[in-house]
Structure formats: C-alpha cells, structure tokens
Length: 424
Image (cartoon, rainbow, N blue to C red; front, side, top):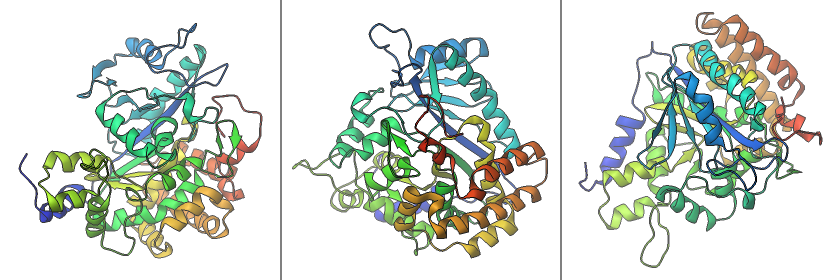
C-alpha cells in the first residue's frame, strides 16, 4: 500500500498487527543471540569483511569457512548485507558494528530452542577461538572505545541512524556498533496487552538478574549493565517502557507517533516526531513500517512479543533466561502471581537496574521472588517443554549469582580478563 495513511490507521495497525492475539494453546519461543567478535591476542574489534593491515582474519571470512561444511547458504538482504540461512530455519546476520546475531526459528519448547542454539553456538565459538577470534558473550565491548569501531555495514538506513544518534551523543552509536544482547520472543497469547505489560514490568528485574556489561573500553564503568545504560541515554522518545499507566495499544500508538522520525529532516535540517510529519503532510505505509523498525522499547510488539532487556550471556548459560521467561509467561499461575507482584516499571526503575543491578535492595528482593515464580512455572510446564537438564543449569545460574545478590557482571570487576572471556 502506498496511499497516505490517516491517523486512525496508525492505531489500527498497532492493534491488528503488532498486538495480534495468538491461540492460547500455542506456546512457541524464539531467541536472537548476539556476539562481539574480538581479535584474540589484542582484544581489538574483529573487522567484518576487510582484515586489518598485516592480518588475515575477518568475521565474514571465518563464518564462510565455518558455514561451508554445515550446509549454510550465504545470501544478501535487500540492502546488500550478507547473511546466512541455516538448515534448521535459523538465520545468522550481522549488526552495524560487525556483531554476529543468530536468529532462531520459533520453537515448540524451551529445551528445543536451547538445544538448537547451542548446536550452532558451541562449535562456532570453539572454532573461532582456534583461528584467533574470540566471540565474546558480553553486553558491550569490554576493550575498545567507539572511535576504534567504525561502521561495518554501509546502508542508507545505518547512515541515517548514525547521523541522528551522533546528533544526540555517543550512546546511540555505541548501541549500534558495540553492544550485544540476548533477545527472547514469545507468542502474544489470547490477551497480548496483558502479556506485553507483564514483560515490560519484568524488564528491569531481568536486566539486573542477567547484567553482564560492567566494563567498557578497558575500564570499570560503575554500572552492572553499561549496555542498558546506553539504552537509557540514547533517545527517550524511542526506548524504554511506553506510558506505563495507559492501555497497551494506546500507549504504543502514542509512543510510535511521538518518536522522532530519524529517516528524514525538514527543510531546516531539524528532526521531527513521526506524528508531526503525519499531521502536516501525507505519510505512506512504507514510511510507517520503516519507522516502527527504528523503535527500541524494552518489549517490542511484532505480532509476537520481543523482550530486549538482557545482556548477551555465554552459550552455556542461555538456558537460564529462556527457562525463566518461559516459566513466568507460559504458566498461567506464575504469570498471574508475577502480575500481582510487579509495580508498573518506569524509566527510573530501568535506570536503577542498569546502574545497581541486584545491589539495589528493592530490585534484588523482588528479583528473588521472580526467580522463585519462574522456576515454579517452568517446572509446571512439564519436562517435554523444559527438560530436567535445562532446569538444572538454570538453578545453577541462580545459585551462583542471583541468590547471592550478584550477576555475571560482578565477575568482570576482577581486572584480569582475556578479551573474549565473559563473566561466566
């Protein structure tokens, strides 16, 4: 559709597409796992395509070598960026700073998802290390500053995003080029508004539990999740939790219309909110669709719900966030109990989670209860959905860190770390 959109049409697309209900009996789960490629001996960011002078290593070159015997198919996106289709319907893509992103298919159980992720990640991390590339599972680059990581994917979208974020400060470009996340997607369910708001209110506690980015550019930052801090400071018009006290669909429509349209400027070179453009001139559905992809809330509705609050974690610990979120969302009793427990999350709570993590008394106390509810819910879903081995890994994670008021970020406070080592 290329015709101009009415204001009512914006609300309709949010309701009918982004918050589209799914059958209550459908309980799929997917994930996007990001990794930071670093050169092993120096800790420098590994270039995506062109090796550094005097070197032969590049992330794309390694992935091509790894992909060949495994039947992966290299393709190009509509914007010309390389990506790989995997035989299990997953895809492997690259972020603007050269980060690797493994995108799973929607799986019918948590344990199926965990197994499919580790079948790719475990050998890939090991083989990369063998050729001198550390695929670091950490929320932000612990060794390099922003100036040493140029834009690796050249497209109009990324050039425009860079220009906009640079006009606001360093956090947006750091996010694009130097961060890595664990994103978990669940079905919207029969009541998408309830499930979306529950995930939004859980977001600060999940940020704190899985915080894994206390170091940046060779220094201790003072934050448990410096990655989450970057999100707090890059542009409040397109991040965070939209209008905590408003109905979900209304909140997200207002959020989207008020967010700055970063793909264009007016005659004076100024950026304006998307709703401002819509009020004074025709906008097309293509422009609206593009704008929606430039919004980065803690939980993004896309017909399913995408939780974006977690730092990257080492593959051996991926069961913990997947099992916890599964138990909290798909077990009705745990979801209801969590809903009763959670106050409405807001920007202040997100900022405290980024800085203090579980050291914040209120966040730490409530996180313990969330873990208890999530584990109870995961067990109630049965071993066909969450295998006993994955429950054991999850319990080990919480015993090692959460029960002691810690997260993997606390391991990064120890100065001696190799470039690719994570807190785990």
